[in-house]
Every structure is written in C-alpha cells, then in structure tokens.
Image (tube, rainbow, N blue to C red):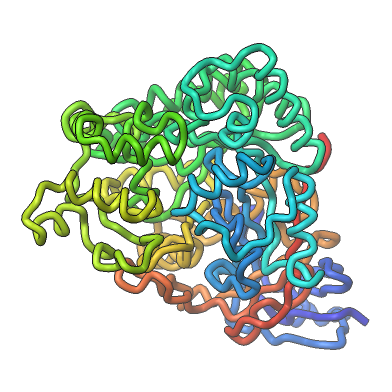
Length: 541
C-alpha cells in the first residue's frame, strides 16, 4: 500500500523523450512505481492510501532554479510562494560571489550591508552561523525544526571568501592570503557546497585576477564541484569575458556554469549566436559547460552596482564617502556617462533604461516604478544628481531593472542543449522583476505553448534533469522509480506566469500540485503548511 498514486497522468519525465500516460506511485518520499498506460493495458495498477486523478495534467520532476537569491528568504518566509507556486522544488543560492557564509563577525556586517538590495539588511534574521556547514545546518532546521519551503543547494561565494582573507582592497592577494582562500573554499566544499560563485562586476570579488580565480577553481574541481561566475562584462566586453571564463576553467580542470548567460546592451544586439558558437567550440574541445537564463529581456541588480569599481574599493562606507565628495562624485559621473564604467559593463549608462524597482527606505517610495531619467525630469535636474541623491539617502540599498536586453538573443540562447533555467529573482523591493515569481511558468506558457520556441519535453529537460546533472544529484531531475518524489503537476493548456512588470508579485496559473519529498506543498492550487525542504549537499565525485 503506497502513500499516493497519481492516476492517468501524462508524464514528461525530464529526459527529453516523448511523454507517456502512466500511474505514478509514491511512498516514503520516493517514486516507487511508474506503470505506463496502466488503464489501457488492463494490468495490475498501483494501490495507495490516496489516489489523485490527474486527467488533463502533466507530471514532471520539480523545477530546479539554477540562479536564486533566496539566501535569507528561505529563513524569513515559510510560505515562499514566489518559488513554490512556480513548481520550484530546489534553488541554488550563494550566487554572484556574495552571500552569508563563510563569514566572521566583521565580514558578516559588511556583506549584509553590501547586498541589502538583494536580501534586505537581515535585521529579522538570527545569524547563528559563520561557516558553510553551519548555514546548511540552519537551512535543515528551518522553522522550528520543520525545514524550509523548498530544497536549497549552496555555492561558496568567492567575494565573501576574498573579503575574509584580503578585505576590500583592489590588489593581488599575497601567497598567505591565497592559501587561506584555498582553505576556505576546501572547507566549504567538504561541508556540502556544490561549487563556487563569483560576481566579477561586484566588489571585492572583481579585484581577483585570473590566476587567483584559477587556483580557487582547482580546489573546487578536486571536490567535484563547478564554478558559476557572473563574469566581468555582459556589455561591451561580453564575448571576451565569456572566453576568459572558459579558458580559466579549462586551465583549472573545473566544470563551468555560466550564470544568467545573456547578451545585453545595444552593442550585443543579434550576437546570441556568437556566444553559442564559443560554447560549442569549447564543448567540442572537451570542456564541461552549462549555462542558465531567465525568459525576459530586462536585467535586475542594485543601483550601486552601476558605479565604477574604483569607486567601490573599500566597501560600503568608502563608497558613501566618495559619493558625498563633490569632486569624486563628478569623476564617478564622468566614468558612468562618458567613459562607460565597468560596473555598467563598459557601456555609457542610459538613465532612461534604469528603473528603480525597490528602496530600502520606505520614505523614498516615490522613486519606485520610475526610471532615473523620469525622476530627474520631474525634479528639473540632471539624472546623475538624482541617482547620487538616491544612493546616499537609501544607503546603497536601491534595486533596479535595467531595460537593455534583446528578445532574439533570449530565444537563441534558451534553445541550446546545455541551457538550464534560472530566475535570478530578487524578492525584495516594491516592484521586483517579474522573473522572481514567473520564470518557470513563463518558459512553459509563453515559450512552449504560445511561441513554440521549445517543445514541452525539451523545455522540461532544461528545467529538471539538466540542472540535476550539473549539481551531480543522482536521484533528482527525472521521473524514475527510486528517485525522490519532488514533482510538479501542471496544465499545459493554461500554465502561465501571472507576474508582470506592472504586477510582479502575481502568482502563476495552471500549477495545481507541487510535491517535495512526496508531500504536497501546493494542493488544489493553494500553498499548504508543509515545510519539506532541506539543504542539498554536494555528492562526492
């Protein structure tokens, strides 16, 4: 007698192969039976304490968000419907080289300040951990020992590691500092991290030269992990930046996963195929490469990230001091508007593409939903004057949408055979990017059903088995007997992202059931109180 049988369901099993009708049995958190065409064949059907008639629905593995920013949200919000309602059953956090482990008391305060725009300042979080292992244990414990909303895997943030060993200075690490960084990465990998991330347009991680990154990637490779860089440019130097990461990881013998692999800004219009040619060439040469994207054109980050790197040296307090100084602020403006700051990917900033999506100080809400140019025009002042004031008044906590993408690039890249889905969803702010709430149903609704860019079976493979293979998870990502019962049931005729740029927190439609560990976390379209998520630790090579 099984716990549950999903009866007469169309199974898209994550392999990319054709769908089939089956009864799927679940017991003890695992798939225990997949009986194809059970009704038509008249064979013995699985028996369970509960039977769910799934006529008209598709059953697939749970979706894996390869680029998430839920590092504190998982400890703040037991509901977490932003991801649960999409069918996400696993998130990969610790992204872009900045997160909350490993830290000490000094760097914890610094990283909290640096990424307030991503996760809030953390005043509502009890930071009882300092190491990677302690953070993963905290995720396991979740809410009163009951766990968290979805499963989570963790990447060691290279910027946080550099913060511990070197600080915020723009200089090469000493041999002793490099040894400490190696040790910190090795410890994090032993404690369960799946790899290492970098934010190479964010301080202090961006100050690392390739030789330093290569040495850290060698450590990651020893433990069977992968390197996930937000590389040095998504704009004027995008192809060179991608090539740099390919060459670096080849030298280190490390697997590579390209984070939010976009080709943005006017200089890259129509150049998606150029990126894919680079990836194909590396794959043909034996490289182990994958990538993720979100199915939208605009990007999302913090306003402070647009500043040139020299203006960010020394950390948040040093940035604020430079912004307060008129002469230094004018140098910053010149780099951003004329030269093209590295923080804006080497492209002169266009203030009419920078929309404020959230502020840390609620008193500044008037900026939200407007571009910097629009707010400046309303005030009768230059846009840099507006941006500078907002940076200072909001303590660097403002988030932005950057409207610089190209639909043809988005579609070209998502078709690639090593593509996976990642929301890059920032959940904070009054007007977050709709990808935080809509990435996975957007793939299924818009790009499968409406546009036909991907077939259903292929798209599901992009969102399930491919990321599971990158994470080296031997029992997730497929509908197979013995695999974990992390599953999604959706209606292929109605599944759609409800979130829009105008109403970004609207939940999706057409996903009535989501299971994690064989337990319903969404049932009849409603979030249950089940907390079945845990930390997913690296599987030894």
